[in-house]
Image 1 (cartoon, rainbow over the protein chains, first blue to last red):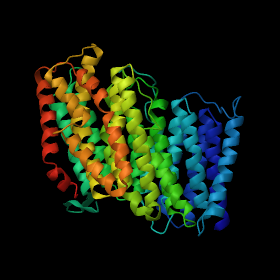
Image 2 (image 1 turned 45 degrees about the vertical axis):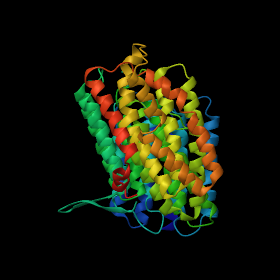
Image 3 (image 1 turned 90 degrees about the horizontal axis):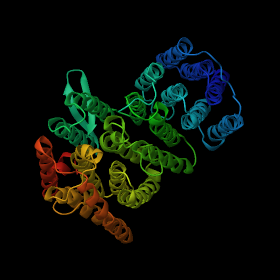
Length: 182
Length: 361
């Protein structure tokens, strides 16, 4: 079970990295799907079946919507992406250091995934100029917050998972028209 | 500020803290005032729909039983708010609130980690930075377009959603990281002083009138952050009264000043001077009582802090005179609305106890 949790945590980090590195809808869809799959598996390994299902459903709806609407391209690592690549790598290393070295107790994979995804999504939100990328990052944030609700001695219950799933599912359904007149 | 059972219907119970309940009342009062005496441009129905949605969001945040849900609800509200018709791009509208959510989330995660005490300090940094980003105060000022409709602008975060979010974050942060309480308070005071200085100076010196109002909200938030940071009863009471002043006085006056600002009308009538006195926190308005309480709280904590805040308070006068003039000469319904806003502020300033009792202070 621990090995599965470790792989799930790295999948979540990989998904966040793809969202940081991608501008196209296919790349963003793969990223959000990996985050959702990672956090859902982490919830399942902790025995929270319904919570994991809510996260997976939310991420899946977001990914499908990204693939269904708009121009389909990968947009992975466009020119000038070196800084983003360094960001994704350093973000992962810092999160690993916090989860495995600074903090103690069980649940290191969930700690790593939560810190890595929250940090990388914050970076993506700051960089993003296109609505789709920022909304997808917001969906990733929601999934990470839902997953992170299991950290600590007192579980927050099913509600954060459900709300996170709903927000992630709705992220790409929002009208993203730009600069409308007041 | 302990949560209590505010509503108890069969099968439904919503725990809302006394402070949150008081701010919910203030937000509802502000909406009622603006809808009853609407500014000329936005229609009353539009104000009612957007304001009603805002009240629902405030109630949801107030009733959220955990900080996880508060942060997730904030993210949901931020996304819906960003989807409103506005002049800025959606990415620009969502950037700061989403960053706030990420910082608050990181702060919460660090607060729950087991390990050395430095983790609690990191948590305090994340929560304070997240709160500042959500409110749009320094160092995370939201991108502001003076021509944008108010409901889609950052003013919503500062004057409508911000108060309840600040109370939710501050009260829960104290429970989550008691060992970093002093650092948390110190950071709030530091940010507060920075915003008092920057907000009041920028409000005085900026060219555009609407931007001056934006900065004036920031200066008021400086007082609120100082009040929350002081962590004695007087500080909390001062923060609450400034938040009431923002909701019931500054926000309606800002909305009523939009049209005169567009038409570049400036008047020096008695109503303008009264509005300026209210905005500057002069006696007998609510801002004066808040300032007295804040100075008393700061003196209890560390008297040089009270001295610094007192010097900062002097900076309110020049921008308030400018903002008071920008109200123009209110006519008809707006004149009645302005009169009510001034009267409410006087009533709270002269006898603030009912508001403080409502907030459990």
